[in-house]
Length: 167
Image (cartoon, rainbow, N blue to C red; front, top):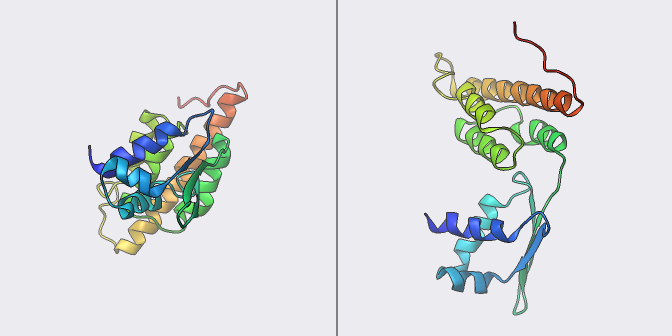
């Protein structure tokens, strides 16, 4: 396991359902993992963003700390936020795959739904000859449409309605 993955896992283990916020000292964490404080900064900046469902508060200085707060959304609120704000008008395959992985991790989509989403937005699925900017725009449209369908499906299942038949 890479160091960044270990640091992320350690912090996420501390953030439980009962404790949606944790306060850490950057230097102590760096000392624990035997790395530079900049490595801690990198993990926080790339894996604990608002898009990932976290807010980071930081205070520098001798008594400085890092507070990581997990933002609590309902499933449909989180999906709607991602559809509106994160996907935007265009998205790369790597960004889409990362986003789908986060949705799976947060149990907003199942592993099966995640596999289908990844296949639909893959470079293989969009292998028609067109400029990369058009592929990114098409990928965003596909991902938004599919996540909207998942949101509707989840809402109808939560309300006890039967899913529409495909036959």
